[in-house]
Amino acid sequence: MKQIDFYLSKWRAMAMLVLGREAQALQVFNEMAARWPDDTYVLSSRAHLLMQRGEKEAALVDSHRLLGLSPDNAHTWFNHGYMLEDIGRFDEAEAAFRRATQLSPKLDRAWYGLGLVLIRQQRYDEAVAALKKNTELQPMSPYGWYQLARVHVDRQQPEEAKKIIRHLKGFEPKVAAQLERETGLLVGQVS
Image (tube, rainbow, N blue to C red; front, side):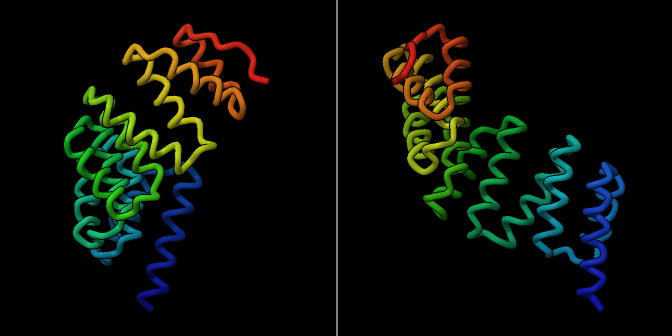
């Protein structure tokens, strides 16, 4: 019976979300958390919803609880880092992203998050290293490349940024054009 109740509640919460009724979905997740306080699905879903609603400190409470339940889960550390970054707690976010990359060195988005936090801290050499790791793991995603080019521009390394823009023109011409507009670095057509 417990399993049936759990799945019925889960589907009810999902239905509320699909209908755009976030407050009602949150109420369902709160009821579920009262009944199943150690359920990682409930905690992660509620934390995500709380972040979306701007209730960031409450989301962090669930995230901390998740870390206690799953201390070796790289995705939990990544999500925690994302939340911390969002509220400007960059030192803590850095530590969370680093832990995620230690647990799962191929988790490309953790390297990306780490790169963003290091940029915010103006630690550009370390940011370049993290973003290069992200682009190695996810070579066709423009996000890491974009941030990497921006760091090179900020560091007065236009030739490095131009190389990235040329590279992006090969598979993401819109992002390359955006970088050209933002930086004033025109690299011409790629053949």
